[in-house]
Image (cartoon, rainbow, N blue to C red; front, side, top):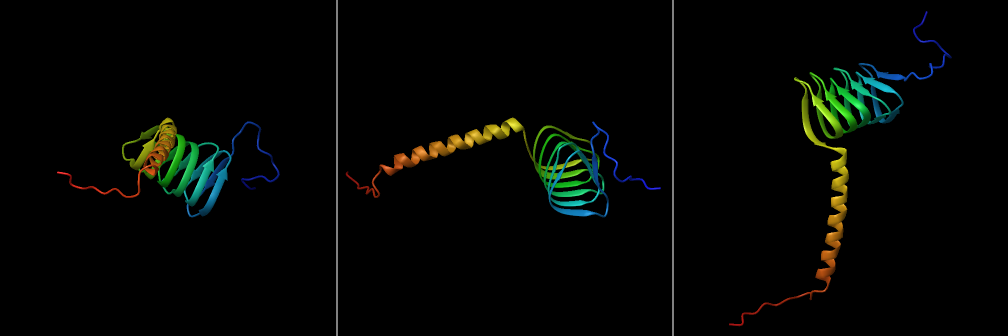
Amino acid sequence: MGILKRNVPPKPGRASVSIIAKGNSLSGDITINGKTHIDGLIMGHLIAKDDISIGKHGRIKGRVRGTSIYVSGTLEGEIICDHLFIEPGGQVQAQVCCTDMKIDQGGIFVGERTLPEATLGAASLEVQAVEENEHQQDIFADLPERITLTDQR
């Protein structure tokens, strides 16, 4: 008797759970519908439509996007999520864009965190700086190529 049954559709309204077990590794761009638990190694980009949990043996190196991310293992790279929870023993070394972030005692965070609104604000400031720079270039275009200073005392 097996644990998994063949040809049985999932029950309606239930989310699927994907597990990358210890000893397994994946590389590349990965998109997962439903919840994800990782105790193996992922090198690349992971997009999950739901929560992601990284177990104490789990390691991700790359870009990660999910609703809520729970880290008990290691995560390096870029993170985009609504909620980031670094649990005891969890290590995050990343650029993080999230609304809510919690680091438990024994969790490690090295990197930079921005809020989603701050990211949008920075983009508009960047556009404004480019426009100002273009305006300054027009001002300098009217100046002569060479200016000679002489002492007129």
